[in-house]
Image 1 (tube, rainbow, N blue to C red):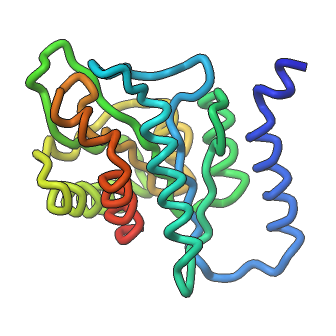
Image 2 (cartoon, rainbow, N blue to C red; image 1 turned 45 degrees about the vertical axis):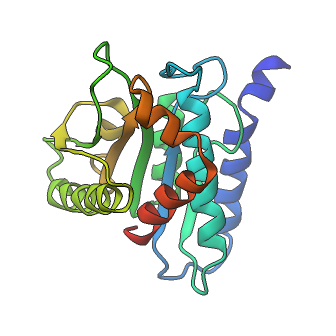
Length: 207
């Protein structure tokens, strides 16, 4: 029973996939927002007790809400809709099943250096088909975020993260580190509702 509840979000999403492919597909851009961590995996924990899993969930929910209010909303799907742990492989399987046009993984950073700050975006270096597209959308989103919230840019970087590696052959994919929870200023910024709105809107505009 516990295992079933643990994966309920993913099961619901797979059911949505079935509905999608039972209907006429349109040309609307389809985006999977990967909401990092969840459940027993809190991710980074900030100096004020803030947990990464909660920060990225609030931002992802706000992206979804704002998108639904658009006149022509995008097809946006989250890898989790609640505090549930979804495996990395299930997250990427969802993107492939949905035939996503873009995969965006949301995270927050942490460092032993309390002065470390800023936003950085990761892409997969050896992504043959979509490397340029991944770097381009990553640069666009990071630039928009830094401008909107006055945050330091740490640039576009490359890493062999599983969620990037397993989507490499299917669509552009990036992983965003939305500031350092180990930094007093950035941790406090990320817990304020109005700032979550600003971050979500900045990301949505570039999707």
